Structures are given as structure tokens and as C-alpha cells.
Image 1: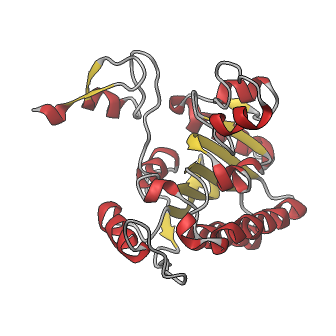
Image 2: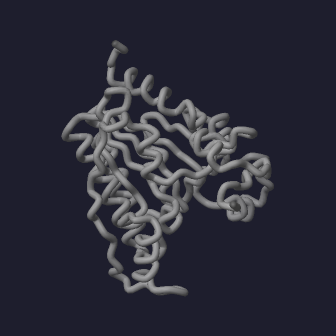
Amino acid sequence: MTNLWTRCNNCQRILYKQDIIDNLYVCPLCQFHFRVEARERVAMLLDPGSYVFIDENIYPEDPLGFEDSLPYSTRLKENQEKTSLADAMVTAVGTLGGIKVILAVMEFNFMGGSMGSVVGEKVARAAERALVERIPLIIISCSGGARMQEGALSLMQLMKTSSALARLDEAGIPYISILTDPTTGGVTASYAMLGDVNIAEPGALIGFAGPRVIEQTIKEKLPKGFQRAEFLLQHGMLDDVINRKNLRTYLIRLLRLLMNRYEK
């Protein structure tokens, strides 16, 4: 019976799980946005029956033979079994409001959504396909940043993804970035903040370094709400903050504007 109920991380009230699921994983009382698995996000946004997943068979390797409390190869195997995914991102081609798009979504349950070589490769492939087909690219970020177990190979993905997105920009093809809780580290420092339009979910933690590190560096106390979506919107780092329940409708209107498509 305990699996039928959960506690909201924000208002601390006990909630019936099905009520949260029916509300797109948003607390019906305080509007707190729970994390959503990558494949469910795809199903929430794209038109039913219109999409197929792509690049599913790209698997990470362990070129450094990295080991901390566990070998990296063991961590990969455990996370692949837990999530049934090859790595921390899924990509799909489908339609959104009848407009063909490529959608890439990060999976936080896979090693904190960390960006390794596979994530970088999938972002680059998604951008390249969007360029060839001249269709918009949408990326939903949810990540703790670069994957330390891959060292410099992970950091190289910042340049790789940014270069691929720059080619989209030069071709005039829309790229929409959606930042969810959390979006931090190397993902924030690369593709998450490079959208033609940067959107966040309410209350999302967004930043590069953590607040404690920043406070120690600048020797000042940070303001309340620092690195939350609403704070970033007020200071010009985001274009909008949209409730998940309104996101699909918002994206359809935005795509029609960017693609010069009129509603029939």
C-alpha cells in the first residue's frame, strides 16, 4: 500500500501517486515539478503515434579504465539495467502539433544525467540530422554536468555539441532548449544555454558551479532563489518559465512562429 502514496518534496504533503501522474508529475497542491523519465517526456510532448526513437544502440565505453568506489564499467552496467537505456539520453523523430521535429531528452536516473561521450554524440547526431532535414531541434536537459569517469573525453563534448549547434544557427534552423531540475555543470556551459529560445520549468535549479563554491569565490552571500529558474528569468538568462502542463501548447505556438507555419 505504501507504493500508492508519496510525499511532495516542496510542500511535504502526502499525495496519492496517481493524482501526480495524471497531473503530468506536478504536485496538484503547490505546483512542484517532479522529475520525469526521458521516455515519458517524449510521450508527453510529441504527437501520439508520430515518433520513433533513433540512435538507441550507441553504448559508452571505459577508455580510461576509471575506478572510484566502483569500476566505471560496473556503474554503466548497473545504470543500463536500472533504466533499460544505453546511456543518459534518448532521441526521437516525430511531430509536435503536426510539425516534424527532433527531440532529445536527458535521463537523470542514468548516473545523474551526466554528459559523457555518448550523450555528446547523440546531441551532435540530432543536430546534424536536423540540419540535413531542415527541421527544428528541441533538447530537454536534466543533468548534474560532465561525467567525471570519462575525464577530458567528457569535457570535449562541450565543444562538439556547441559546434554542431552553431551549424544549425548558421542555417537558420530553430533550436529550442528546455532546462529542467537540475541543469548544471558542463551541460549548462554548453548546449543547454545555446537555444534560440531557452525555456525552464518552474523552480528548476540551473547553474554551472554550486552556490557554495560561488560564495567562497566572490566572498559574498548569494541572494535568495539564486540559480532558480525564476531568478534567471528576471536577470535575462532565460526567455521564459513555463509550467509543464502548458509546455506542449507553448512549444506548438513557438514552432509555428519560428517556422512561419499558420494554424489551419
